[in-house]
Length: 154
Ligand SMILES: [Zn+2]
Image (cartoon, rainbow, N blue to C red):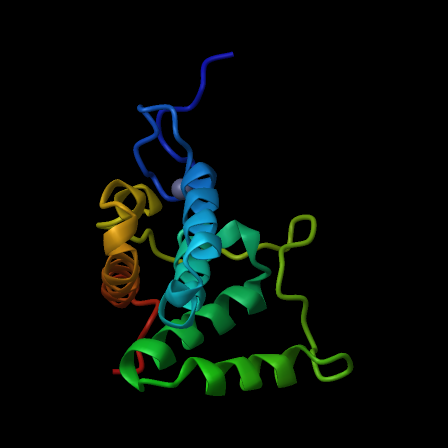
């Protein structure tokens, strides 16, 4: 079977043989090796990766992730505040909807989103630029979502 040359989900170029998931693991590995990266980058990295692969979310999970990215980038919500809110929302009993996809209930965008940066761009820029690259990546996702009408708050 021929390997896909393009990510079926985000459209990233896989022609060098590396998938988006490979890059996701590389970024996670860099964070483990450099715990100082985590406060600034971890949450944005996980959000960015999943927002470009919305089928990993349930529809409600995707909507919540979009709100979270918007809050992070536009309102400057601190990671700690956000963690607390997420924990409260995820605590048993309070959560009304599953965050992750189940069966045919998965997230998708109503309009096609034109991404301008992918996980592979973050890893290609190298470990030393990791935190800055993740912030640029997250910003590009925010801009693309806004252009596609998935973020309409401002
Ligand atoms: Zn992808």
